[in-house]
Image 1 (cartoon, rainbow, N blue to C red):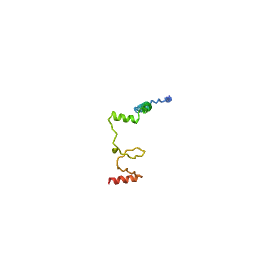
Image 2 (cartoon, helix red, strand yellow):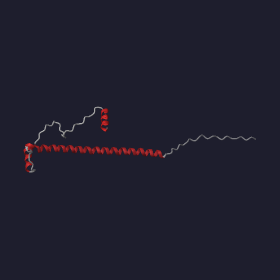
Image 3 (cartoon, rainbow, N blue to C red):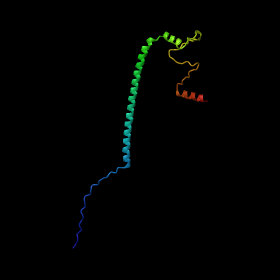
Image 4 (cartoon, one colour):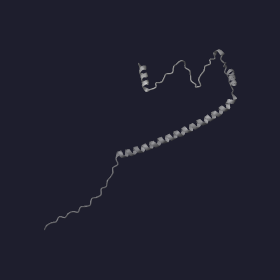
Length: 139
């Protein structure tokens, strides 16, 4: 008698279950992105708060300017040059200068301080002239 070897039936292959490992780098990257988002939100909130405070201060400045203008308009009619001269001579013991001490000069409309005979430096027209001037000043 011959023995017949039975063939074993092959089982169908099992579907592979892929297990994803969460690596340290992935967690670190997610935390870094989250921290960046929170940092951006904090900076935006701080910037918005600073803008609000600047606007409040600007509004206060405008209100103070308006008040200052109103007070100046109220004070100007009450004071004249004669009244100021009277206060200066009586309360502050000031005196007007002698005619010989008064020096009159003609000043153009633009206000600036006269500092003597200091010539104003000429500005070079090109960068090469500026470099050449700098080199000659060094030598």
